[in-house]
Amino acid sequence: MNEGIAELSFMPMVSADLGAVLAIESVSHLHPWTRGNFSDSLAAGHWAYCVRPQIEDPVKGSYLDPDILWAYCILFPAVDELHLLNITVAPKLRNLGIGVKMMGAIEGVAVQQKMPRIILEVRPSNVSALKLYDRLAYEQIGLRKNYYPADSLTGSREDALVMAKSIKLGE
Image (cartoon, rainbow, N blue to C red; front, side, top):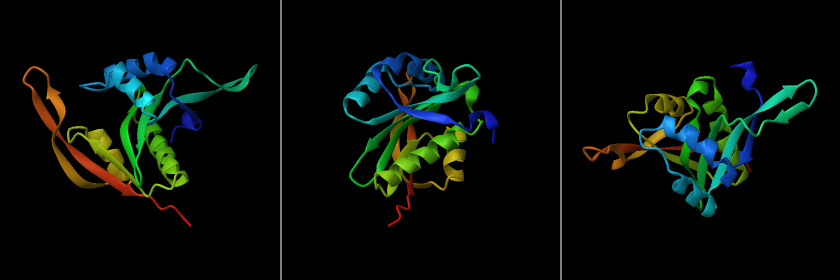
C-alpha cells in the first residue's frame, strides 16, 4: 500500500464541490453523471462524500487541502441497506488503494448506521471495478437488463450486474 495515501479525509460533498467532482466524472465515465444528477442527490439527502488528502506542511502542520479532490462517492440509505450509487477515483490516482480505502469507509458507514447490506450496480465491462468488488467479497445477486446507456449514437445499452455484501454489525 502506498504510504502517501495513509490519511484520506472524507468530507460531506457540498454544491461548491461540484466543479471538481464533474471534472473527474467527465473523464471517468462513458456516460457521466451531470451537475443536475449530483445536485439532485444532494437535495434528496443522499450521503455524498469527497475524498481529499491530508497535507503535511512544516509551517501549517497537517491540514486538509480543499483545492485537491481525489475521489467521491454517493450513497443512498434505504431501510435495511446502503445503496452505492457512484464511486469514482481520479484517473491518475487509480490502482493506489484509494478505492479499497473508500469501500472500507463505506462499510464503516453501514456498520455505524446499522445497515446490514451494501448493494451496487456495475457494468460488466468495468473490469477494474469488478476486480475490486470481488476482492472485497461482494457477490452478484442479480442482473438489470439494459440498465446503462452504452452508445448514444445507436441507442444501445449495457446490462448492470447487481452486487451485494452482507455487513457484520456486531451486537
